[in-house]
Length: 261
Image (cartoon, rainbow, N blue to C red; front, side):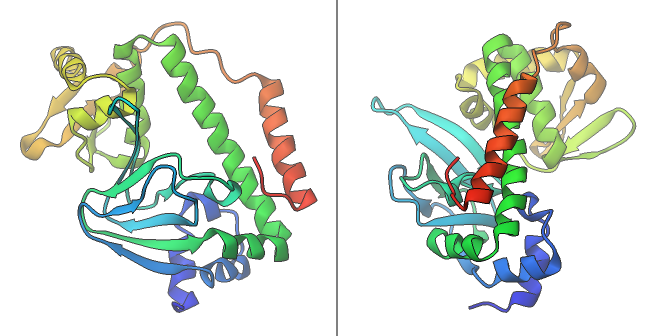
């Protein structure tokens, strides 16, 4: 078992635990193990039983699904500060994706069954975590609406804007620089399209001076120009009744002591 002192400080950096008190963080830290994976290692395979949830301290992990005909769909590129699978603590079946290390990865690993016992002993932790997961569900709802209502170019613009929130730093008042390098193949995987299509769209964004590729392969984006390329008619926001349903049922789940979403 790792020392809980430094681990509790690390846990505070993860969005899932942002609402926990110091005492609650120490209780979660006591359930953690250290995980080290080399580039190319699989952390788990699609359809394996969910036994652990992962929190990335350093490195990068690709989560992807494979169809019966061999096609791949990238769901997430997890970097420092990310966790996966998002509903791993509240599922009783199998991992929905493969997870492979894209470089050397260091992460915290929490066994699902151990964490369930913690939630039963500390209902307040369960309640606070479910509030954060409710926000995640609403975010995923917005992404689904992006894919449904936006043409592909706008989907890519929306994706770049979302990624910039966690993977980019400001250069000046107008430009952001991505600290993480996303290949066109990776962007295509996240959009469910081809690398060639993303290539063409990126070239178009370059001509519009909304995107610049700097030396070393890092991408710079012009926030206002990208935002201006989104459709004038905004994507319909999540219905207030849906928002209320998600949050109410998340809270009721914790009150009953259940762990399904």
